[in-house]
Length: 326
Ligand SMILES: NC(=O)c1ccc[n+]([C@@H]2O[C@H](COP(=O)([O-])OP(=O)(O)OC[C@H]3O[C@@H](n4cnc5c(N)ncnc54)[C@H](O)[C@@H]3O)[C@@H](O)[C@H]2O)c1
Image (cartoon, rainbow, N blue to C red; front, top):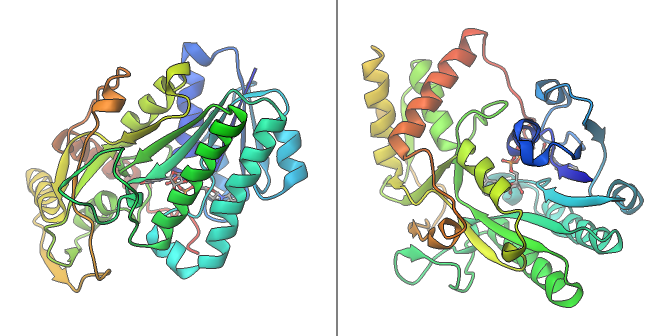
């Protein structure tokens, strides 16, 4: 039995592999990770536990022959390789389309050829964009505000098509803002960025009014979702994969500065112009994923506090960049 994780040098993928290795349910599986090191650095493979069940490869998800061979005997595919996030997709639209959409199509195509049982796709809250009302529910139509969200919505449709046409067990998880330290921190995300700035004496910079509300989910809760989603009843479904805990960016900055204060650090908050003309702002309905037994371990305060402590420990050994900027 084999699990394939694409994007294995990435923020979520590297941590997922470590956590799958700790789980009794997956003890009988070989785990094969693949990355082309476009974003996640090759050295990140060193952060993955040495275990005879793990094989880590260098390869491209757009390569048909390579993926065809890789998926032989695979039962579960966690497909995480992508150009992830609004900014890099805006900067590199054609490359992002090639990897995010064509790469996903290649993964789906090779999955049906190899009788893969579960194909887990990490979509994003970005598919909702601007919504009618203030609660994002799975049955709302996608209305993305940027090409990242549009590519995620396209891949959701591809997953649906492969489920409907071939019965491939595709499962779509619409993740919100993932934060926390996994095998490593992703410095560019808002929670981590605020904490890094607080710990290095820089002001916390809010773009726009800071009133835009988002759901935030700790990476440990993301891993719980990734594990519990391997169930026949999830096949063909879309799930909001958030914590159900919402905060505005300003509230988040306040939480970070309070925690910093408890640690003897005074933090300044400053405002700059908004980065996008429209900002999505909504709460997340997570009742569907909860009906499968998901219960988040971290609310925002608890999760940010843990992240603060984890980053403080990491910085003791010096700042390190884990990802290439593209
Ligand atoms: N981090 C979040 O907050 C978040 C939220 C919603 C959805 N997601 C989605 O979850 C997935 C993982 O996110 P992440 O934060 O770990 O991203 P990441 O950028 O840290 O990791 C993605 C990895 O994919 C690799 N990659 C890129 N192109 C590749 C290719 N052609 N072949 C092989 N590998 C390739 C990169 O080198 C990188 O290591 C992505 O699909 C992302 O869009 C993430």
